[in-house]
Image (tube, one colour):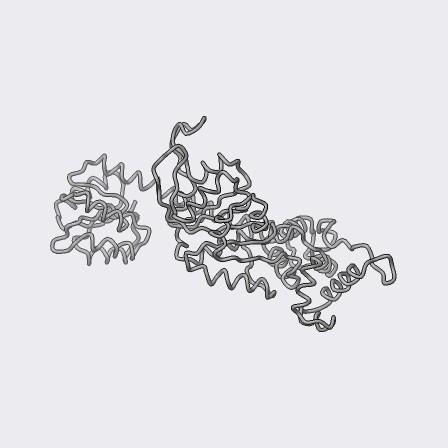
Length: 442
């Protein structure tokens, strides 16, 4: 390791340097703040030992300057005047550890070994995050559709606030992606983004996973466990499909939303959470309230900012750009030379209603890239149900007026460059066309 000793006592620096070099570390010395900053600008260091008394200078004042110069520098504070208050202040300012003088070589070895372990975990986490990014395409948040643009504008407008946001929309419309985008544009972006998958657990397990539990709280609780609220401290807690939260857990979730307070399962101590809450649902929560399955007060607490994401079938102008974005990602991931869609594949993509929304589109494009053998992805490479032609509806046949109108609007939309052009051809205004598209699921 490359280490920097910052202490105004030359004899202590020599002794400390001898000990650290015997452990096969590379060591540089600085007797003042000026010298320390000079060394940091000259070469990289893994860690620095900083004395709190540097002659007339205060080491505590130097600490933030060191971290500003090298944000990942592990600063180990050393002092002959150790107090609990100075230790707390040092750790709060960003010190990695705190060693009272005099200390032994074993203590030095222990603190450096601990740094090595933390550094290894940080690198492992960075590698895992990079693997996750390479395993799944980043969501393209650009859109040509007014309804989607309106949703994005509202989401990004409220991102900087602490307001609770409820994202509504069908499964696969990108609610989780948008939640993460809100987090990344907030003041909590450097904090964790923790997801609670509400449908995956029973009420008892969901409560334990959310709030944590103490040893002996239930059968199998052999140790104290922190929950996801604690894991999200300083960041964002995202409830995926919050409409699935069991009735027994809803009052405790309401308290978390109202007071940011909670208790671990089996504990009576009230804890306070420093989290921002986002939630998503594919259910009509107002209808769930009316049916008695969802608490009305919880619904109102969640529904501070309500954002609805339109289904993919209502975003026809976004289908091909999204498909091209996914095509480029999967081609790079698989090492295939696929670069574009054949005309029949594009027509099939535009014709399909995408009941699974963007998630279905992603799976279809991934399959197509895997099966394609050349530079062009053709219709045959897509799943069989994608773009399957509906039964032909003929004027004068045994069909309703609604079916005729829906088919005519679908054909006009497929052959128009924009909603405005389609509305002009149909002789109606764009708002009427929007309502008809929603009615017929186009």
